[in-house]
Every structure is written in structure tokens, then in C-alpha cells.
Image (cartoon, rainbow, N blue to C red; front, side, top):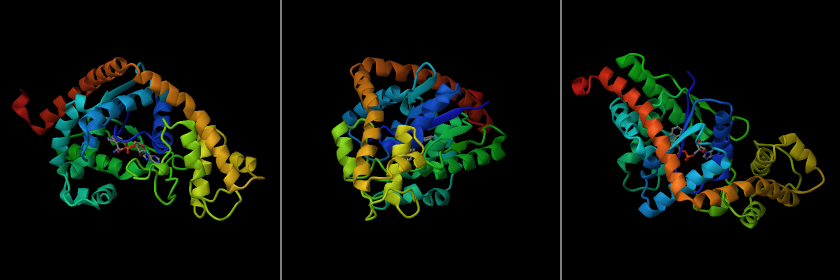
Amino acid sequence: PKRIFSGIQPTGVVHIGNYLGALQKWVTLQNSGEDVTYCIVDLHSITLPQDPVALRQSILKLTATLLSIGIDPGKSTLFAQSSVKQHSELNWILSCLSTMARLSHLPQYKEKTQKLKDIPLGLFVYPVLQAADILVHKATQVPVGEDQVQHIQLAQHLARIFNFKYGTTFPICHALIDSDLGGRIKSLRDPTKKMSKSDPDPKSCIYVLDEPDVILGKVKKSITDFTSEVTYEPETRLGVSNLLQIHSLMSGKTIEQCVEDAKSIDTGKYKFQVAEAVIEHLNPIRKGALDYLKNPDYLISVLKAGGDKASERAEETMVEVKEKVGLGAGV
Ligand code: TYM
């Protein structure tokens, strides 16, 4: 059977890279009646230091945002990773099948540890925990942005190793990526880089909950080039092309249509069109999220129900895994 699983870190605010690259797809899959499970990966967030009060608040804020963009707890299983202990349990077993060499070559690990003097072990095993998330739910499809490809490959690799050693247990999952469009939304300040939660410059990201005037300010200050025409050339004109992608995804118009509509204006004026499309799209989402946030008890109840459901499925997998690995002598 087809099973969809994906996750998002609760730290930092959701930006339009997350939204256009992954979350919109989460909603589409949910609404096309697929079996979908979505996880707020709070255990992944503590691979870097977090303030406990802020972390808790971020989880609720993310839950509110996910509900507001259209995640429906009646259709999707939405839960916090730490509430389903089987994720951590499988993480250990998969760690024993992983090698230091394989993990240290992953690009995200290299990037994240570049500036660190002491590297937490959790940061190193981060992708193993991610594999455990996917495998414990026996997911077949994982909707993510392009930056997660290597992590999905590791999950496939660990599934194969486990299946080979202990007998077929896990399906080999596949990443679902919008390769042409939302696969990688770029930073507004440096279009050679992806839009990233950990970017220290807040002007590099448009957050899903940004106020309209903030969005306008950020789009106006976005980096383009010295050509005033609006053309789509993703290889050479990164900045304008990124704006066109954002504009197209937010407005539902094709990129060609966006280019056509901007034929008589320069990139400076075009930025106002982009900002307007983004504001129009995000306004109801922001308002909805703020409403949900007024009722934290409801948000907690959604996560609790999702956690109970996810635990049941994950426990089935763990009973099978432990038996196959020979753990616990069947107790
Ligand atoms: P995270 O929280 O960084 O990002 C959540 C999702 O947003 C996508 N994304 C982007 N897509 C396009 N352009 C961008 N600039 C951009 N930035 C982020 C990410 O690809 C992701 O789909 N390790 C994961 C969380 C995770 C997970 C999992 C995902 C933990 N376990 C199991 C899938 C399955 C992460 O840090 O995502």
C-alpha cells in the first residue's frame, strides 16, 4: 500500500521555501485521499541548542500554521516526533547498521558543522533518525524539497541493508519533489543559496506569517541584477528567476504568463507585482494561524490524537523489527 510520510523542524519560522517546496504538496496529497502522516520533528531540532520555552511555543506555532495552510487532522495524522517513542527506538537499531564514513559524507552534515568547534553526536546521527521516521511508518513516498534528497537516499540505503540482513521488512521509499519549481526556493539576499531557516539575515526569507508590509519590504530589497527586463533564465539570472518562480507558485499563473504580464515594466516595478501575489496568498494563512494560536488546547489535542494514532502504527513495526533482529527474546 501507498503510505506518505514527511517531517518539518519546529525551530525557526516556516518560510515560503518550506511552503512552496514541501507543505503545499502535503496538502495536495492529503486532499487526494492518500494515507498521509506528517511529523513535527522536535527531536531533530534539539541537535542544535534550543530554549525550552521557545521550542514549545514553536511547536504550537507550527501546528497552527500547518492547520491554517490546510492540513486537516481528520485526514492527516499530525503529531510531534517526541511523542512517539518508536522513532527513537528504531533510530538506535538503524544506527547500528550505519557507518561513520557514510554519515560524515552527507553534505548537510558538512555544512552544519563547518562553524562548530564541538560537534554534537546528535547532529551526526540526524539523518539516521530521519530514516527511522520514514521507516517506522513504512512510508513509500516522502514529499520534500530538493535539499533532502541525500537524506532520503540514506533511508533507502538503510532499508536495503536491514531487509538484506533480516528479511524484507521495509518498503524502499521515494522522494516526491517538484523538480521544476518548488524543489529549491532561493534566498532573497543571495539567490545562489537556498532560502534557509538558519540564515542569520531575516531579509533572506519570506516567512509564511509575515505581515504584508514586511513582505513588501523584503521583496523590494531582494537581490536581482543590472538588467531591467523581466526574463526567466534560471541558469544565469538567478534573482529574477527566483522571483518569477515564487510569483508563479503563489498566483497559480504559469511562469510564461508572469513574464508576459511584466513585459512593459522593469524588475523594480515587477517586485511590486510579486509582493502583491505573495501577500494575497499568505494573508488568509497568517490570519488563520493567528486564530488557531488563540486556542492552544485545541492544538495540543490535535497533536495528542495524531501521536496516539502514529504510535499504534509505529509499534506494529517495532514488534516486527525486534523479533527479526532477535531483541528481547520475544518478551
Ligand atoms: P526542514 O524543516 O528544514 O524543511 C521542511 C521542508 O521544507 C523543504 N525546504 C525547501 N524546499 C524548497 N526550497 C527551499 N529553500 C527549502 N527549504 C526547506 C525541505 O526540503 C523539507 O521538505 N530533515 C528535515 C525534516 C525531517 C524529515 C523527516 C523530512 C525529519 N524527518 C522524514 C522527511 C521525512 C528538515 O530539516 O526539513
